[in-house]
Length: 72
Image (tube, rainbow, N blue to C red):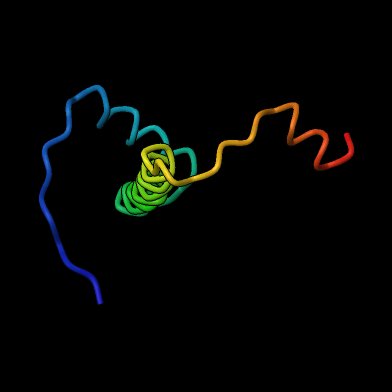
């Protein structure tokens, strides 16, 4: 199932989207959906990284120690 939403996009961005849609022969909505999926995935990765960064109980391993552990 899908929903229709309405958004405002700057003219320059719309022009770029139009170009990409024309070049790929895909609908603008296809590219918007793919871009949003990518953004949400990257946002989730960022949240995980921030959670790990702020976890004071998480062990910190130096680059040198990691190389030793991996026999590099």
